[in-house]
Length: 152
Image 1 (tube, rainbow, N blue to C red):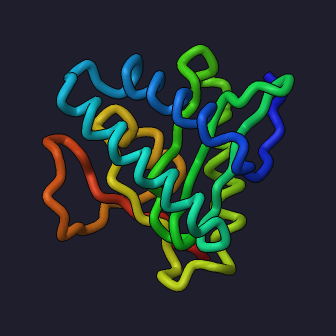
Image 2 (cartoon, rainbow, N blue to C red; image 1 turned 60 degrees about the vertical axis):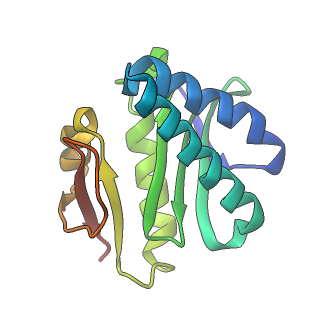
């Protein structure tokens, strides 16, 4: 599948929220409480970006004018969203979004790393991308692993 990685536009907000909600409900967790918590979190992050577009890297993967993936790295170090629609999994879209975000954040991150809290099903993906275990002061759900990618 051929995709373009381009910056997110303000007009994309509703479509992005729908995409991320669908991925959470079909691929991330079937637990209703966790789904609600994750959806609340992505909504807050989307609102943060809308108020602070210059303070983060927000990219989308587009195929034939349809958004098939999205990544948001707040303050160029806090990866808070990486979603690809289920029918496009395992086609390199998540990797392409991640590589584009790393390139964008490399010169802008004051932490010299990208940090995230990886869901259990995504830990192997992030390890394959070069992320390593990290520490977090947050109380995380069971199985979630704090990780970081050192920007060189």
